[in-house]
Image (tube, rainbow, N blue to C red):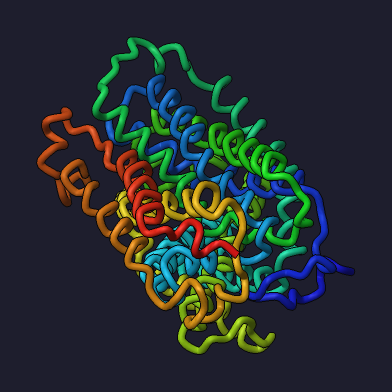
Length: 458
């Protein structure tokens, strides 16, 4: 069975002879990756920060619609280049220079993998009656095993999880809506605009942080696959899935408050009643599993990309691939066990942290691919520090650092840091918009000034 065959490719280009599939599989994969318990928790955060539930749902829709655009544009890079997402950064930052954003992306993968283990482990613990830490370890190991098998099984599992998610979330949504007075919950919708912008940034960041690994799931598609097709199948799946799950989470928190916070899994499955407790717990665990696997799968390729920059290797052996995945799995499992207390508070800080560092990378990567090099790259040079992309690219690094710096005055990380411009805007955090727009524009200007847009195209 092809889906059960161990994947041979690691960070090396996928040859045309091994390309397969249709971009519609990206819809089911990313729909499943978003209709799960962590998405619901992110939706709950929009109410937790003080936004009225009705405006929180508006922020969920708008944030995902906006954040899904760069996310899906990254997905369209996969079929054109046939390489993992983050190794493309070597064309912008240089083979060694790309290690800087790579390290930050590894932190992202570990954070999301750890948070996934916490929530999935909660479900496993209730099903099996294992201690919480043991359940987290079991969940982490199972995620690593699927990632080891690789691309085909991940997509196949995504289809199954997507179908299950539709059934489960439809049932839970009906139970939530029919069992409570939503009219009272949504009444008197006062708009606190600064807090609305904060909620918008939280939901947009959910989509933006998919950017570093979305092309990993599309790189086996035939190179003739159109950018438009890849974009819309990915965009539809990720936005529809996230909006549904986050809206559910926002309403659940608005209704339950403290009964939801810290007991997310127990509250969600409790909506189904005692008779369906075990099936719903199983569904929650499976639903979270898809994105958990994607986190460890992308994590190992990012670690491999960073380390092979210095060894000049373009591929990994099966043994090395398994070792990388196991290392990411163990570290993510340990972080989950150590950090499972105060989960919601830690998670919102984690999202804020990621947004400041990942949006400048996303901006530079997309501008380079679509506007500077116009989808044409020298793949051999991506693996060679002596090639045309060089060891370091001062232009990309300058744009990236300034892209981070320009966000600082506008940042508002509650209880941690408030930039001087945030109070002027009523506490609103618009730093992510600047981080998405300014670095790409600066990078394009620097490349144009020094002729990089012509000199570096193959």
